[in-house]
Length: 359
Ligand SMILES: NC(=O)c1ccc[n+]([C@@H]2O[C@H](COP(=O)([O-])OP(=O)(O)OC[C@H]3O[C@@H](n4cnc5c(N)ncnc54)[C@H](O)[C@@H]3O)[C@@H](O)[C@H]2O)c1
Ligand SMILES: O=C(O)C(=O)C[C@]1(C(=O)O)C=C[C@@H](O)C=C1
Image 1 (tube, rainbow, N blue to C red):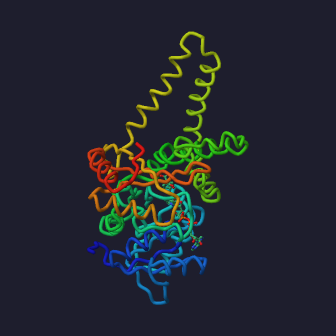
Image 2: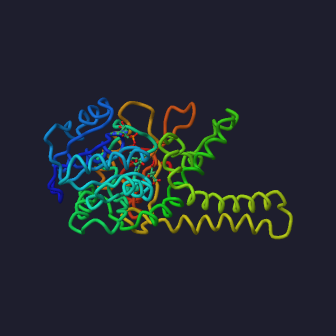
Image 3: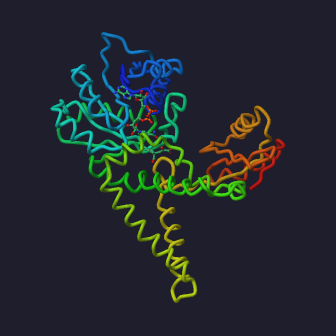
């Protein structure tokens, strides 16, 4: 496979992000050197094929720091000092605080360019890593004036080699953007899921797609998120206050539904949601909307794998897949996301092979 980076690339922090980057680069033939404060995390990433263990004398071209946000600046500063010929980037979910801390530390930021892939998972560690995690996803480059174009282009190469889409920004603009597009969604999901903690079993038994869609990221690591939110608190508070206003309006309207204008207020809230979701770009930054096809999958070993192979054999590109299980049922429903124009063909091809297409 071709790649832009000449390498080697050193990855510091071999959890979810570091391992995923290592897997993606190694698959493209880039030499990857792995380092982590935890020897187990580092060896695990190497065992999964994300690269080889770092060795004394390594001379990386690019260093990717993928450690928790509150130690990012400290680790970037150490790497800049230890490898005077390398360019260093990081992937922390906040960008202004690490840059300010690096300035305070007196680090040589003429070789540092922060970045942030807008891709991740609600799970941590190497085991959750995937070399395809970044394909088609936006990856922010949080620019500053003290790095040259030539050095910064190595970060572009990293992003492009991993199949992601580089988006130029500044640390402050990035942090304002992620407050609405990432940090508020995390909190809304967590708060919603927290309501389930005391919900009666009779209610939980009815869980369908809606509640699962809204709560997936509620499983995220609190230790990571307290760092992210702590480094972007003012922008997140602005978003929470706006949401608080929306909630108050909705509560009032539903509480006095027969009062003049109440039903309209509820409808307006729902319609505003339609408008908002329609603005979300599709894959590769386009406005492509995808369609979901639901297929019944029996609860037997190998069934899902067989379905995925059949979809591939039908010549349909799978954009996403998700499994839903109803409590007590001996089957699940695979929700297959595809381009709208592929639906008819996929439906016919799967039914011809004996699959039960539910919707
Ligand atoms: N999880 C996501 O979805 C996501 C998405 C985009 C960006 N990020 C950012 O990526 C970074 C890593 O997140 P993750 O989800 O991969 O976390 P993770 O917990 O899976 O991995 C972090 C790794 O860093 C190592 N580490 C901690 N302190 C270290 C130090 N001082 N020196 C060397 N290694 C150290 C840990 O041992 C661990 O292996 C964070 O800054 C996070 O904000 C995460
Ligand atoms: O989809 C997920 O599970 C994520 O964790 C994704 C997500 C996001 O909010 O988009 C979460 C935090 C990261 O900083 C970047 C990506």
